[in-house]
View 1 (spheres, rainbow, N blue to C red):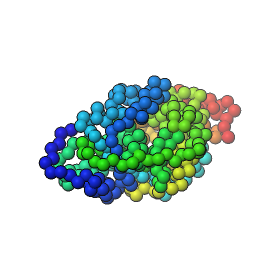
View 2 (view 1 turned 135 degrees about the horizontal axis):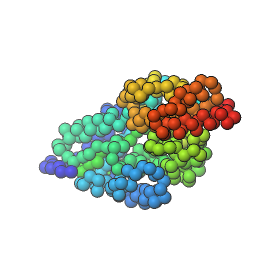
View 3 (view 1 turned 120 degrees about the vertical axis):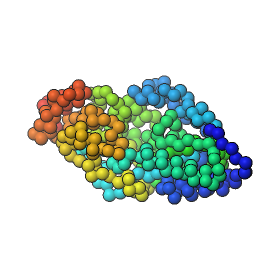
View 4 (view 1 turned 90 degrees about the vertical axis):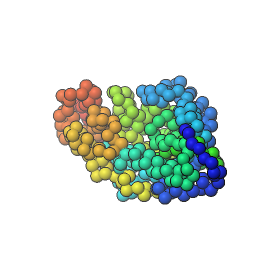
Length: 360
């Protein structure tokens, strides 16, 4: 970062204005923190040493730059952390979809437009608006796009606390929100860190279908359905397939169980509204998509990044968990000669579930 300012800044007033401008850009909250993440760094190091990141090698690739903002972006002394709600308006009740094994459940965050570009653009506009007021300054914008400990930063900036499921929870808004950051050399006043309000509640832990929350505040990603259906590129471990149910992209169970989400508000962003082609569709219908239909129906969606092969892999598992019917078996049998070894393996597993006694 390289910035030169000859006029002294009223930093308290600037921080207030940044929060006001952020609200005008659609963020529900803006907070500021320093760059000391030593406590979170210890937690990250232990998590990596235990191999709980699975095949997410990018989590360890950058060393300690993830927990040391000044190493990632030299000159950084403050982080502006922002959150934006995504809980979709007019969505079919998530629990009702999970309870219907004929439907494909997509994590609520992925029903609308991919958040990465939208939030990054809004943060860029916030930085540019700040530059209009104070002149050039050093900054860099992030939205889940670089080695950043966004949850720890959000907690320190007062946006919420990290719950026992390892998601950030806000006392008045729950946990259905995205995070983004601006690393900056502006010496802004910092906000107070959020207090933890989980108390003795452990509702999220037994709610996890695969037992991925191995202890309070400890997640083993290798068992997490979001990891298995999104991050993992190979075969889903056979012992976990029946636990995935009808979740074809991500998992929201721990958040659905969290009592703080009774305060969650629907998003104000039209781009986060559910798309008809992605929202609670029949598994058989999703499984019949051609590669071109997948590309068309997931354009601009976070689902696009897992690719067609993993999409079919996930749905094959869900169909293996669905009630046995001629239509389900026929859909699976139609892909027994799929060009992908990965898809064929999961189709064979799914057919075995129906041929060995059947389901429901």
